Image 1 (cartoon, rainbow, N blue to C red):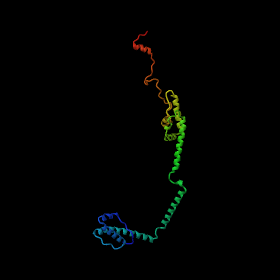
Image 2: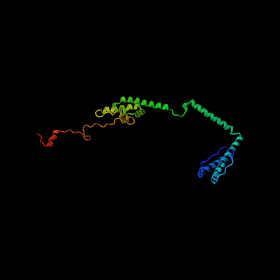
Image 3: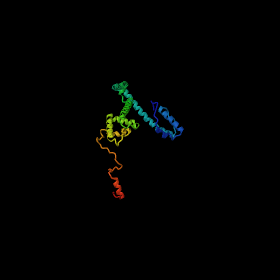
Image 4: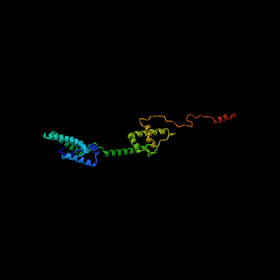
Length: 242
């Protein structure tokens, strides 16, 4: 071998080297280096010589491949190297990349990276609007109990529904309470704003829906009858009428 100052060692050599002792391995390695450098190979015993023959064959194939590549490069050099058009195109590509980088620096808002600061501001503004709207609605509702049980998440849901629709829902519920004031009490504010309002939105509300009246006596299934209790007592005691 010649014209090279390096070579490739493969792990597949290990299966041959493991069968030898350290002295044999040292002589084998020396022989490999000498062969790669084009120097005289030292004398080897049978085991080391057999391993060297496998390695030598692989080194020869690698060297032949290397020489072919060198020959192709020399032929290309005789033709003037790369075509000028390709060289010009490469310069254009580099220039475009440089310009693109410069434009991105000058216009940072045109990149695809998310604007996290802007998203955070939107979330803060949304929550603030939701809380402000909830305070206005709370003042309109008749039973102001359980305010702390309405979460910020629920307040944002209410904001998405809209203040006008919720004000209308409160008005409808308040009218029903007035009609049934003799038996019906308002829900806690927490109950209404967490779920009760749903029945009074435009898409769910049924005008004139009859509410179940309060019972006039303890028997839900019978009407109370008028009765002469004195006459009933005489009948039960078999007492003659005087």
